[in-house]
Length: 92
Image (cartoon, rainbow, N blue to C red):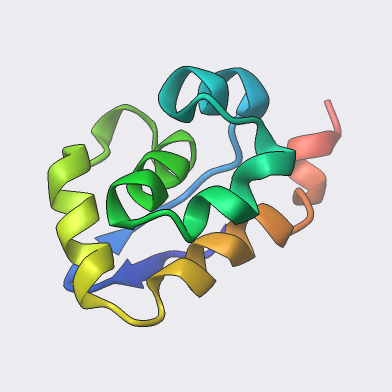
């Protein structure tokens, strides 16, 4: 996945192996419910972004602040959910 910028944060997303499980743990929603969640505020959008960032993700508060300042952030996060997995992520 290509790098993304939200506010002043340069982030390198990756596709989560267990996306639904991580989303339910972080947000209480699965991938099918994320579109509605992304409109619920920057803190929820930040939690929806976490599964794509891995262990080196900025704190949720930092992500939420960046999302709140960036009018394109939610569209950027939506694009991560819409992006098909890369061949290297599918093939063994």
